[in-house]
Structures are given as structure tokens and as C-alpha cells.
Length: 349
Image (cartoon, rainbow, N blue to C red; front, side, top):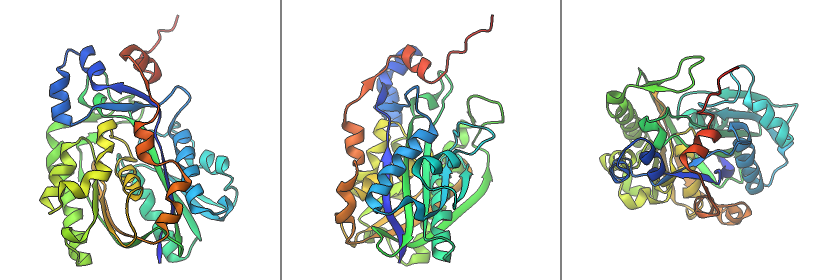
């Protein structure tokens, strides 16, 4: 039995409301809310980045796993906003967690599916017997250009999963990946903000890959949508996952636990993993969970998990995601937000 032995998430407490961004650019906040189904988004503090978010999420995963960090043989950090262009995030994370020096480390990039990319490799290494435990993280402090639609949803947060054999809280039953070269979203070296081809965002990008991965893994596994207690899809907004889920035969109720994430902003590499983390917080033993990510460029990773009896033993050993979403928050105005995100470039004298 190979699967997840520990999981955890972290979300910043700083937030900015949709109304604040909309007011700045003369947009109708109600129209934005209806279109994106967003209320507010997380904003990283001035001392937070992908590395600090990864460390906090991984600490929660370790609390639930109950293992010695030194037993982890691989650390993989998936992100589209690594702090360094040349220097890995994973080495700092591994050092902070006490995993070094006998560990394989790598950073992953694949837009918003970098997190599930790390999960797939971590799972595969454990399944192959290369390592006893492998840590996979999806974390980001995503950027959206001022006034761009992405500014409403490009948020911050992350989730971590420790894969192992035996004593798992969620067993991996099936995996599948669907990938093509579809240039819907990109950021060149040195560019501060990503660009996107808006007309490609839905079709042929998101829906082609999510539905392609989702329908194929159902065929491979022999399961049907009604067999699952929960389903999670990548959440660039609130509408896309609901539409994809309906197309594959899932109900809104099946998406509900993970779907709380879009309400707080969501365009980052931990989006679908964080929805998965929220679902593990409420899932019961023997329930099946369906997970499909999406990364622009483009591709989707699909997983089928079966929750085990151990979930009830570990769930309360770390903070749950809903508490992070609804707990103490600090709201920023647009000027503070621009300062926190480095959107104001000071001229040199």
C-alpha cells in the first residue's frame, strides 16, 4: 500500500477583497464576483515567500505523519514563483526541516500543476522502492499584473504531502497524466508578470486537459463518478471546476470540500493539492477521492485515492485548512497590497 502518510497546508493571514482591487481599476466588483466566483485572496506577508510557505506546510505534514524528518529521502518543491532564478528552493526547505544531507532535492515548474508534478514523482519513487519516504510540495506567491484579470485570483499558499509505504492515510489507486503543447499562459526569463492568451484559457487549455485526464483515468480504473465521495479539480476560478466536474458526471456536493479554496483566491501550484488537503480534513475511511490538476502550457495529472482508517488518528494533529481560511485575517488596502507584492518599483537616484 503506497500513498500519503502525512499532509498539511499553509495559507497567509493577509488578505485583499475583490472590492478593493475592483475599485482601484474602475471595475464592477459584483460582476467580477459573479464571473470568477471569488470573494478575496490570500496575500503573502513581506517576510513570506514560496520557501517559507513550503516549510510551514511541510511541518504540518510531518506532525500528521509522525516520522523522523531524516527518514525522508526526497524533497520536491513545485512552484511557478521560486524566490531564486538560480538556486533551489528545495535545499532551504530540506535544511529547515532537518532532512539534509542524505536526500535528493529538486524544484519543479509546470505553471499551476507543479505541485501534482512533485506528488507524482514522490509517489513513483516510493513505489519503486528508491526511498522510504518522499516529500512533495506545491506552493506559490503568484503574481498578476496590475489591472489584469489574474490580479483577482493570483494568490499565495501551499500544501505538502509525505508519501510512504504502509501506514498511509490515503492510498494511491491510480494515476494518469495528459499533456500537450498549448501556449495559453507563460512568463519569459526576466519578466515580472506572466502573460496569457485569454481565448485559449478554457478551450483548448483547461477543459481539454482536465477532461482528457479525468475521463481516461476513469476508464483505466473502471470507476465511475458516482463511486467517489469527493472530486477536486484545479481552480483558476470558481466556475471552471464546477463545469469540468459536471461534464465528467460529478455533482456539486462531491466538489464542495475542495471548492472552498476558490473563495480565497487560487491561481497557484497548490490549488488542486490544497483542495485535496481540505478534502482530507473531512473525508471518512474507505471513501474514494478523485483529483485532477491543470498546468498551463499545458497538462493535467490525475489521481485516485482511497482514504484509510488512519485518517481519524492524524487529522487533528495539525491545523485544518478551513480554520486557516476562516481564522484571524488582516485586510490590506490596494496601496498596502502593492507594497507587499513589490508592485511599486522605486526609481534609482
